[in-house]
Length: 336
Image (cartoon, rainbow, N blue to C red; front, side, top):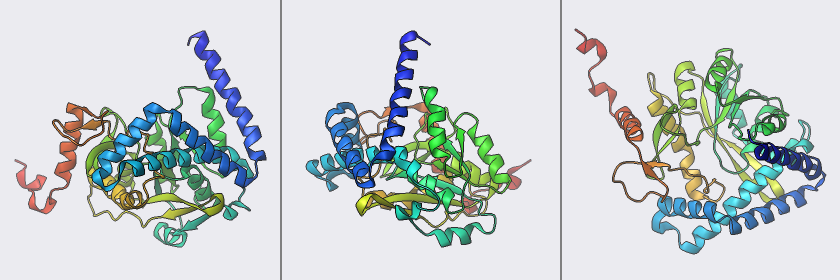
């Protein structure tokens, strides 16, 4: 590591440490307002991210959205994300006793019924709304577990964010080797949570799904875990409410037929969420490159999408999984 990089990493750590001391001092309304202002400013000056977001919206919605509406959604998307990050720094003000003043949960009783006495489940969250508070609230209502997180280029930040995300009773699991740790947690009757709309390169464990009518490649971890353990896979998202409050919406568990593969399970999880993002697109993270790869010769994708033979192979497996298995010969019928 170069000297300049070490200095930069230390400066980032010091800045976040200062924010962690300062932000919890804000009144709730002030924190929400600052997040909105900060998001609007970043949306104005982050030319690269804004271009990605506008291209994503054009590819996903086509003529459904006018150019001014797309611009407004991009600004709101930045604001949602800025508030989510600022709220994570404000979250030391939340406790098991007071969090319900700021976070309500819809579908909690159904979740308890679907998961039974063990409450074992795979919580599949999305980069939508305040996904950080979703995770915290889940533990406070009796579903603490292992949560998979992204790695940081700055290693000093790992423990920093781990402390914030574990404060309600979770156990943070770094991405390297996460699938094994999550699997062991489920085998012991525990609970796991992960973001299921994360795009990964084809050489990672991935699956191709249809997303806003376009093919994209996402993590397969949630589908693989459900396939191997049979534990309920429950999609969840967060909606903003007036006054800086939020509602966590727990979807019904994904209905999985016996013998379903992860190429079938992952799209079913996304399909439960897409209508939410279509109805109110702004809270989704549109400046993220959701469509990094595209089928050969395909049009209508964002400008940054690239063709990839490995992506084509994974997409072919996903298309095969959509076929009616009852119409295909079984292994026992073709052996010998």
